[in-house]
Length: 443
Image 1 (cartoon, rainbow, N blue to C red):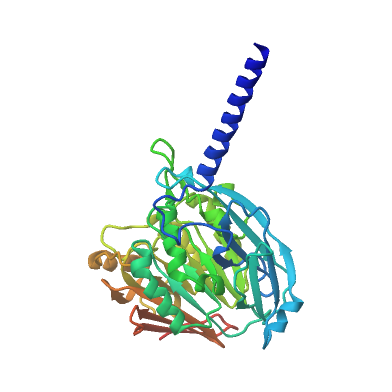
Image 2: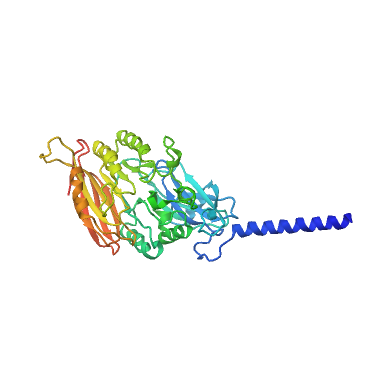
């Protein structure tokens, strides 16, 4: 009898272990119905560069693998004219974060690993090649240029909302932008990168649409309202569950932890780029804006947030920013503000505020709202006219068009150009600044 009980107990235990293992394997590898480009493997995918620290000596890279890759590394070396450069590569051990894609109800439930490295002690103004992997399964070698450690010519790209039908209709925008400005130092994605914050299928589209460009252009991602959503019907809206694992961004410790990696600053070759979260905790960011702008002696100051300070789309109004943030942009002479959200195009400017309203004054800040994806709204022309009370003058408007922008900085000029998805120049503005007096003109 004891023998029979022992055999029965052993059999039940064995079956439970098998069932448990199958359940675990099922959770780790539930890829039913996914496209092949959604499915993680041992090979690194979703490779993306971001800033984290001094751009002349540091760069962050993040990538994804399946859950079987427990340890990952990245290698980097000064690029050379032949393959022998790789013999001088330095190896970094990656930080690895387990991630449950199934935290959002509409995703398949399976585990992946995100890996990240911050390259340090790089040489300024130098071309590096890097690769990521587990020591056996590697990415290709990918090149990027570090920033100079002083003021130098630079160029970057800016996109408004990609958001909808990203693979189908945004791919040609980012690829045309790359054809137009292949040597861009970085790229600003001004919010609503996807439509459904936590939906992994949409993030897979975003990464596939950009392909190697994401791993070569250093990204400055900005959160939009569509990067916030409930994970369950009963839960409050929260930041995209993919955001922090897939982007290695600066953490501003002085801010509320909920703002970490959504509000940060990049100082690139004497150009200050202030990244804001226009969806959450607006009041908590106002003092941060004042602190960063008042303590910066950068030659150019650029602010980017998703919601438009001067909303050109009918029925939209970001009043808080106009009443609380714009006065700081005026006071500290911000040169350029880059927005999205309104799925239209508008470029306008604000002059220097003077006591005498009849007195002509110099230009102060250029404001741009743009869209890169296929979702388009109509302009609210009467609404735009109403911004005259805030000193805003509309200079160029557009609708029903997908855009990208290329901004070049050289000597005493910031040259702004907007292009359609066809690669045709649509708009241009040139800011010329006297760095001694701070006086600016706009043409």
